[in-house]
Amino acid sequence: MSEAGHKFLAKLGKKRLRPGGKRATDWLIAEGGFSKEKRILEVACNRGTTAIELAQRFGCKITAVDMDAQALEVAEKSAETAGVGHLISFERANAMKLPYEDASFDIVINEAMLTMQADQAKKKCVMEYLRVLKPEGLLLTHDVLLKEAKESVRQELSQAIHVNVGPLTQDGWEQVMIESGYCDVKVLTGEMTLMKLSGMIYDEGWLGTLKICVNACKKENRKQFLTMYKMFDKNKKNLGFIAMASHKSQIVR
Ligand SMILES: C[S@@+](CC[C@H](N)C(=O)[O-])C[C@H]1O[C@@H](n2cnc3c(N)ncnc32)[C@H](O)[C@@H]1O
Image 1 (cartoon, rainbow, N blue to C red):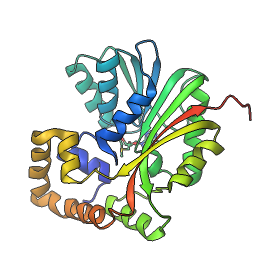
Image 2: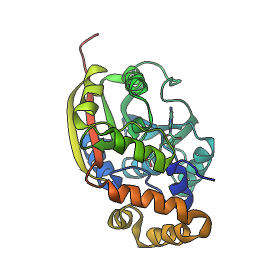
Image 3: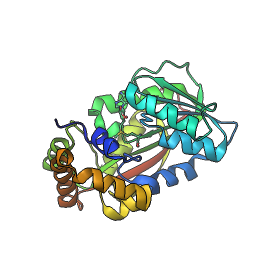
């Protein structure tokens, strides 16, 4: 049975399920100015890779949410194993209706999820993040970049990963943030490394990559892996990643 691309890659052993991999996440972390005192919300944490790294590096308290109960179970176990279970609270929640009070967090981080939402839903999510951010708060996002607005590329990507995705151009992503009440948007763009061999080695290490490749070669996984691999390879000039650091605007709308 064909499953959503991120679930399929997670099943093969991939830990970073995001277009620009570790490089884009490292940029976001550098922009974030994380410290022990800051309250962090990670939305769409999946198996908790970023939340665990943040807790290990900065000793900060993190609330990490996702809709996928199974992924959250894996995340909780991994955080315990990494010795940071006491710092992270994993909770099942929808990005569009977060169960937190206004102005609760200093930083919201959200990787590879907005791309999965329709255009109006993207705005609904980032406005919900704006609500839970403190007045000086910062939103860190990481998504799929469409180099040119081509509907055919969007359709090919949606078909290959079995999710109806909506990647945007750089202008499109910046517009989502500005129109939703953010300002001073800082941007990093680059190539899509999710399924590139060099990107996998950088993100998952040699052993991790070997494990993914062995699993991808299994009869039951081969067809879906090749379909995704070929689509990303064919569209490597059209697709990339965009990482954005957006500040909560002080202007009341
Ligand atoms: C492509 S994965 C990215 C996971 C992780 N952020 C990473 O970069 O490795 C997208 C994640 O978004 C989650 N998701 C999708 N829609 C969501 C929503 N409305 N609220 C919370 N999580 C959502 C999915 O369950 C999945 O774990």
